[in-house]
Length: 189
Image (cartoon, rainbow, N blue to C red; front, side, top):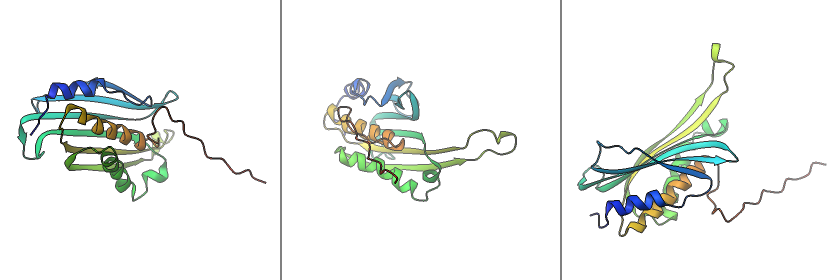
């Protein structure tokens, strides 16, 4: 059951007020998967440096989908550069997946049928490429079926995706009006 108008939800997505750490723009949405869709792309940018990027797509089929277990489906992808120890940590998949589910739960998003993968990529150049820098990334691909009672309910899902983008880049998803205090460093004697 999809009690709200897709165009209302689409408008809320495109007009959402994102964190200043996340630059978001609309991108072409897939047209073959469902009759209605909207897609955005975001980049986590801190002091002019892009730390990671991602996409969020909302698909909607009024007839429903057995695979989705509903009429709508969020599809998300996040890719972020991480330090080598994180990329090679055997628990990185569990931790990255928990960033999504914890964010959805923290923001009281109503969802089910979540699915996804976390991929850790450690690239070490050799031979003629040996002068290239090493590369360490994580990539989260996820989808879930939202339940909207009103078009405003989409906000909890957007905030969750925003948190996932920031956390993947090592940034705490604090509101823009709150400034993090850097920890005091002990002086060496």
